[in-house]
Length: 319
Image (tube, rainbow, N blue to C red; front, side, top):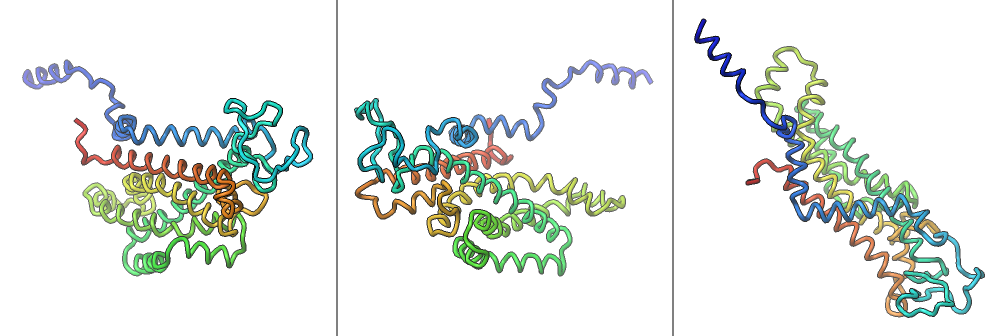
């Protein structure tokens, strides 16, 4: 009895672990994320893009669909007019247009700002839809196994057999051109990627001891799947989803470039790029600014995705 009391006294005197919650895997991953320079740059880019999209009506100096023809101070040849910035030597009596005017004499800067709202909306919405549907199908297939697994994954293989952009073009062609149909097509072609990731995570976790013990105790399969197995599948899905947003923005721009996505006069970067593609040598600002916006957006999400992959990988040495 005396030895037991002595042992308990020693245990009581052990100081508590400092920052108990800081030892959690998610908080440690967040710390690692902020140590990654690529992730920091990506977060800055994405943060600025989101802020621009939210505040576009306040930042934009003009209505993105209003032509400058007939507006006060706008005279002479207006369509495809070059950028005019007073600090760079543009005449003070001319109205200022930071990115010039497009072929319909609309302010390019205002259209690029509002285009961020359209492109980011498509990117986030399509990835959210594809993650929800794809991960659910993948987890059900991996946990159930048997004929259900075979059926679901063979359907995913059929979708993966087609190039994603060509399949998206085919879907939009059937449904009809438009931003909503383009969003739906991009989401559908992305579902197999998340389904395969979720299935692989479930297969690697469902035979572990704590899952076996939960099943032996009569646990509900749905509860086991979504409470115990799903959290272990979040890491690859989050990383792939971050990278997928950049791909979705690029695919939405491609569909709009072909006339299957956003329809005029909706400001969307791919559509703006398509309108000025024949004037790349005479009016390069028509293609340079929307192309630059697409490139920066995709770069930001790719940098953040790479940083998240490194931060959430427990096999990497952090010391």
